[in-house]
Image (tube, rainbow, N blue to C red):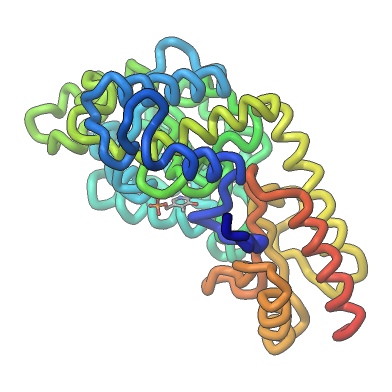
Length: 366
Ligand SMILES: *Cc1c(COP(=O)(O)O)cnc(C)c1O
């Protein structure tokens, strides 16, 4: 056996996966148990793959307590395609969609929706560099809007919702790409949830969409004009098998869901995530040498953003941390500084290693 050297991967996405999941993939890569062939080779119409997809869906349902009147879809095109699919399916003719602009990904969603129909930006914190989530009081919601779109965790800026916005009877749509399944989620308060898998749920290549069945009526109404592949109702009717699904990604998501269940489910992983983030924020706040960029009451537990006094010092930090086996800490170019992404699968030992590194860096450069 070769010894594999794994380093601490703080990447925002694709991101770290549980080691036990990678080992299971490796063990079964040449032949799935009982199938005699690889997940990379098997027909999506086979009983084996049907069972894999059904189990992944069942585990997603049980983890999040998804009510029976919601469909779980496995789609392609990333969360970015959802920026288009959501308005194409849900923005009814003549109606307006409200968007809460709390980060760079929300801004991209707004830009795509505007190509499809009427959009009202209900609130934006862009002028504050998205350093906080818009408050309830700031929301200028459209009465009878087709839906309200929000981003539950702003991956780039490091802010996260703690309480869902109140939107009355208007369907709430949430991009949960970077905090999906990091804590319990009240699915019943949403009409549609979408999440690119490659942050917290699995590898790149699949997007999980959870959609309330009544929303599918809107897709059906547009059936003759909407491209088939972009129609939620088509994917729902066909159990995500209208065409070839991303079989490997679905399989890997299924393994991550099994791992999550074994950790004790969402309440248990939420506790771990709170503990990990608290350790790191405590170090960021300890002396003032580091400076958190997100407002304290909006801080993300998944993506922790912080800066140093000068850009030169930040360059030095990235250089030395990378050399110390702490990879992927460079902040997004639009924010600068540092970003530590510590998703579900990121080990607590890696957080401890970063805290120790930060302490030492401050001692030698402070
Ligand atoms: C990463 C990310 C996206 C884009 O995801 P893709 O799968 O690359 O299209 C969208 N929204 C949020 C919140 C993200 O973190």
